[in-house]
Length: 309
Image (cartoon, rainbow, N blue to C red):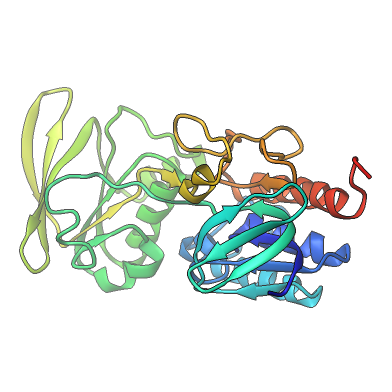
């Protein structure tokens, strides 16, 4: 088996940034990604608050730039390869995937998170038939149709605006009285006349071969009602992709996020974590990049200048 100085698990903004820094510093670096390089960036229609892009940038373009920079410095990226577990040793560890095994001296876990589900009747049955978790991926299929966006954060707000601009009739349902999204997005939603259904929860998704409507519940009036829609975009948060880490003895909190210190170190020497999979309270591209830089610098020190040497 080919040995690596560093294996990075995940090729989202955190994983790719870690790859840039570690490969540039001279570490033999492998990045493993269970999907396409770029991770969740590939699902973001537009980013307005990433430093250096005053006019904004699409998630896909930012992903392409990160991948290109990563490869420029010599990191190897292997896509569509899912990490199953980590065999933890003091000096050498082995990352095992569904395709191979990779001995390494250090690991950075940047596996990110996945979409949280509503877990209501009809959701799984109609996934891909009108139930979606990605407006950028599926939005063009709903031009001039009626859609419901569920959620109250930035992702839900940006997605609602994106779908509106595509020509869809958009409803936005949130279980509370106010959105958590940034004010710039809430103002635009108001200005464009997107109808917000406050204090509203989804109880059931209706349809057979495709979505026909949703059963909604107003938690203030305690009344149920039905809304006819052709699609529903569920954007209610994320669940960390940390199961393999927890099974390998890496400590997580009660929600499954990997516990790290200010140097991004986990409880296992030589294993670090960065980005949305960690306990860091801010889940943003910029904060993920910052954490990844710290993790890469610490991994370099572990490999090249170990404290026990």
